[in-house]
Every structure is written in C-alpha cells, then in structure tokens.
Amino acid sequence: MSQLAARAGYVLRGNSSGTMTKAAPDLYPHQWSWDAAFVSVGLAHVDIPRACAELDALFAGQWRTGMVPHIVFDPEERGYFPGPDRWACAEHTQDAPVMPPTSGLCQPAVHALAVERIDRIAARRGGDDAATVTRWLPQAYEHLLAWHRYLAHGRDPTGSGLLTIYHGWESGMDNSPRWDAVYDRIRVGPDLPAYERRDTTVVSDVDQRPTDAEYDRYLWIVEELKRADYDDARVQATVSFLATDVFASAVFAAANDALARLADRLGTGDGPELRAYAERFRRGVAASIDPETGLALDTDLRTREWLRVQTLAGFAPLVCGGLDPPQLRRMVQLLESPRWSGHPRLRWAVLPSTSPASPDFRPRAYWRGPSWPVLNWFFVWMLNASGEREAAARLRRGTLDQLADGSLSEYYEPFTGEALGSTDQSWTAAAALDLLA
Ligand code: 9WN
Image (cartoon, rainbow, N blue to C red; front, side, top):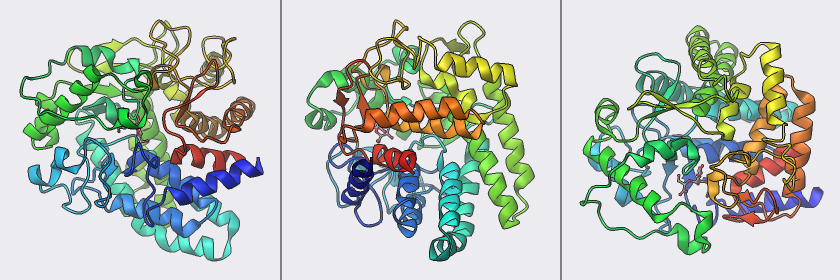
C-alpha cells in the first residue's frame, strides 16, 4: 500500500504541467472540471499549495455567467478532439474567456466538496498548510458562489430541484445507458463538419470507447450549442439533448451544504441562500426515486419521461442525504446486493457503472459496465458522510484491492479485473491517495 501511495504521487507529479493536471497523460491532456476537483483532494495529501493552485487554474477558465467549463485547455497541448477550435466559445459569446480557451459545457459540481476536504486535510496538518488554505479560501469561495448561483438559476430556471444538462458529457458519464433514449432521438444534420477522433488512436480497442455513431451525436450537439451562441435560454429552447441529471443534482445539493458551512465560517452571510439550494435539490432528488427499482432516475425533458435504467447514478440519494433511516438502510442494502457490488461474478466488491443484472450491461464499454475507482471512492466518501461507516469500509477495501495492480487505470472490467481505458489516470491516483490516507 505504501508503494501504491508513492506511485499515485508520482503519477500526479508526472501529469502536472506546473499549474494544471492533465486528466490523463495521452488520452486527456487538458484539465477537466470534476477531475480537477478530485485531483485537488489527492494533491492535498502531498502538497497543499499545489492543491489550491489546481483549482485556481480551473477557475481561470470560469465564464462570466459563473459556469465552470468542463474542459480548460492547455494552449500548448494539441492531442485532444474536440479541441478549442471546434468549441470556438469566445467567438460565440463574450461570457467565455479568450484565454485560457475552454469548452462550452460543464460537469458535476463536486468542487465545494473538494474545497471542504482540502481545508480539513490542511487543518489537520496545521502550520503553513493551514495558513495557506485560510488565506486562499475567501477567493475560492467567490468562484464557488458564482458557480452555484449559475447552476441554481441557469440550469434550473423553474426551481424544480433538478439540474438540466445539454449533453451526456455534462453528466461526466458520457455513454451511460442513462442517455440512450435521449441520444436515440438525435438526428445528425448533413452539415456536421468533418472530424477525426483522437481517443481511438490512444485506446486502440474500440469496444472500450463510445462508438462512431455516438461521437457523431456528441459533435452534433456542439454544433447546436454554437448555433445558440452558448446562451442558456436559447440552448434550452433548441438543443436536441435536454435532460435532468439526478446524480449531478445530488452532488449539487451536497456541495451547497459544504459551501454553506464555508459561508458561515467566512461570515459571508450567504448561508441561508445556499442551504435553500441544498434543500431544493435534495427534494428534487428524493422525488426522482423509482418505487419499482429503488433507484433515482433522470428525466428526458423533451418527452417528460423517466429514463428507466439501472446505473450507479441511481444511488444519487446516498450522495445528498435526506433519506429517512429505513430508506437509507434499503438503499445501502441494494448497493451491496447481488444486483450491484454483491454480484457473484464480480472480481472485487465494488460498484460497476451499470448493474450486471441489467440488459444494458456491457463489461468493457466505458460507462456501460466497467467499474470506475473514482466513483467508488466518491461513494466511500459520501457513505462515511451519512454515517454508513461499515458499508463505506467494505467499499473502500474493494476499491483498494482493485487499485493494487498499480496501473491507476481509468476503469476496470468488473468480472475479470482487467485494467481498461487510460493508465495513469489522475483522478484514479487521487482516489488511491485519499483512500489510503
Ligand atoms: C469528455 C476526463 C473525462 C472525464 C469524464 C469521462 C471522459 C471525456 C472524453 O474523460 O470524458 O468529457 O473525451 O471521453 O467520461 O467523466 O471527466 O477524465
């Protein structure tokens, strides 16, 4: 285990460009939003100032609207598609910064949770580390407040307690079966500009990545966003992908709780506003639980129908709390049941991205089945936060066993344990460091 920690620290150092950490050295050579938040927690265990700098680099790409974009591009790096030219954000809206260039979407708002955790790690250490974070917090707080206000208003204009997303990429679970029905409806226009994928030159086994047909739709939505000049109201009226994201909503509720605690500590007076957001989104998530499966579901906003699938996003209520004790017990039991981490064929008792008992399950295909250490770590973190310490300890054990091969891969085949996707994935290294600490 000490070797694993050393290797994880080495990977994070190697993936750093100085101020930002590439999500992965070859496959994702830029900074991704939720990756950066998770990475900053890993960094906090080895270098507190660098952890703060990681989030500062991300906030440098924040839009005038408050949106924290899903990619902040390193202008020196080329190897990723779609890159800054394809997004062309600053050409379409003055809300986007010219430098650093960014994408025009966002990802789950785990950042305030990360900041709270960095603060706790630094406080435990005391001395210069604690002082560094105390000095840094007020400005980090301002970025987070603007980000949360953007989401609460721009992405939930009707006050439903559920965030609206425009692309599977915004969920962070790109090709999850969660979005199949929404993507099925998308008709790619004949004027989709030609493109060449880069991801399949890095991961040569195409089964591990989304298909070309899926990519066409991903890129088509980018064209639709540009046509609406990345303006939220125009996008919501025109884009062909429009859904609520129950997992991102739960993350947002929990992040508002964390930011409210920070507001109190800093004496900003925003606590009541942030607690009201937390309550609104907790209620939205609780109302999304499907009585048939016990899992929380997303909604297709064009048809107003629930998207009935069995993915780990269904455990969203475990992230934001608000379940009464029997409901909480039932959900933890479901998580550990043979449909999930207790499935008899699993190599390790961890959560796969899609239930192996579901017809959508495909064990090698990215978000359609493989298990992702980063999300297992996140559930360990959230289970601990809701007092479910024994379930958290079991999931932690399984995740560490999975990580023991030292490849720090992006995802794993859940039955055979084969490492898949990118190796040296930054957020997997962060997961290892935090779980070991
Ligand atoms: C598109 C960086 C990102 C993660 C996402 C993951 C994957 C990108 C891609 O990699 O998405 O945003 O090109 O496939 O799905 O969750 O943030 O690690």
